[in-house]
Amino acid sequence: MPSSTAARLRLVGLVVGVLLAGGLALLLLGGDLATVRRAVAASGAWGPVVFVVLHVVLTLVPVPKNLLAGIAGALFGLGAGSALSWGGAVASAWVTFELAGRLGADAVDGITGARVERVRRVLRERGLLAVVIARLTPFVPFTVVNYGAGVSRVGRRDYLLGTALGVVPGTVAYVAVGASAGQDATTILLAGGAGVLLLVAAGVLARRLGPRRP
Image 1: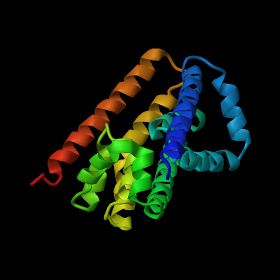
Image 2: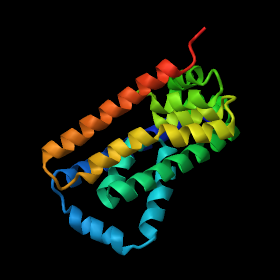
Image 3: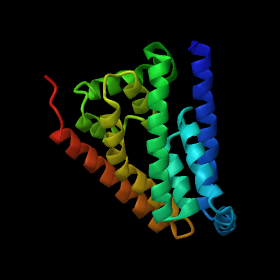
């Protein structure tokens, strides 16, 4: 993939991410969330379907998964939002994994930059636990892991199962922040802080249990 095209994709991801973050912030800080939720509920099955499809498309660009999880919580609540965000994350991981395998390492490097090398190091053991560790590592973006795994030798089964397990803490944490919209700021801060602590603790534990570098 030409570097100019990859740069455009990253720029699109940044712009869309900023716009979505702004919209979520407005909802969290007192926007007309009740009207938005009623509109989403009135859409029936289309609301969840559109969210999952958009989740897959936007994380290809990439737009941060955790931002989309917050939006899911704001629109669908904690339970449904967690299920939809988790489903969107797993679907996105699968689609990006397959796409990366077809694009090849050079194209992936153009999209993700040097950060993909960190993913390759985490996945050096090519096992299920390595994927879980990558998903629990807070500083490695979701989309970078997706693309990096697609050009590594990790198996599809281990990758998808590791993803399904590893994204749970972060997904629930950020959905909880979104679901707390409409409550006071203290509740939002407590939910966000607890979620971040849970994610960091899970990442540290996974690293301690994971394979050691030679």
